[in-house]
Image (cartoon, rainbow, N blue to C red; front, side):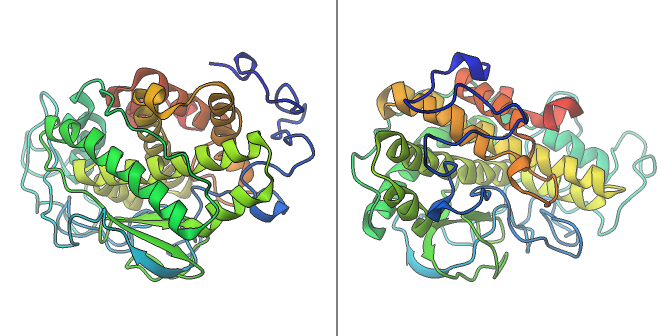
Length: 375
């Protein structure tokens, strides 16, 4: 769906500016910019790990589907304030072996070498580590789990003006995400385990990072770290209907995206992709793998919202704001001067719309898409 198909809220420009930048909403700052400062990414850009590049994984580990310490997907700087009751499993949750698509030979879960291998070497007929990881990210059984059915998730009708309100909002949504994805993960022959959830403000410590500006998912302990103070800033920035719609749709998008990373972890896609990123021959190749990871998470989060669109109430102004501003805000164009590690605005719009409209994980397979679709 093109930008021209979406009706603009009152006072908003009809579409992108001639230079391709995101238009302002009326006289207010760019949606997603708490405090009215310059446009800053609110989802998707954490601190660079390991020198001059952003990495999703640290040095290779022997267990292909183990928890890769140092795996950071979205950064955050803040203090731990509450561990949600939504947390159903501890970090000792069992490692999940990936499922394979037709024609892909399964191998030992401990067979991944600790250094890049020559995929042409080894036992005839058994793929090398790179081939195995490529097979996982491209053909995992999760992609064949089918169309997602609604769980009739309903958005709490509460102002996101306090910590308790935002935490309750997220807890409701993550409960819905657990119900929605459990049967699909199991249909892909993977074991389901709900993520732990931590709400925070200020600064936070995690196994993945001690310095990052936004909400993030940490695979090392399978935890969503949700920075509630940004949601409060967005809500309080202006009291008009469009701004309040943006703050709600942004929170919903954020939770869905982070939960998408958890699904990737459960399926074995995330650790396999992190290994591919680590083994990539140059920075451009590493950034492309990173973009495939992030765009898939956005697509999966959008699939949930699309499946529950009617019960959640994503219609009218909410739908316009979701498509015009939430999708647009996630492009690498907003990460001024940073690495192209999450995908261009047009790529996020493509994959988010794809997930929202088809509600099928098969259509979120960014790892088989052409390079132009993950630019």
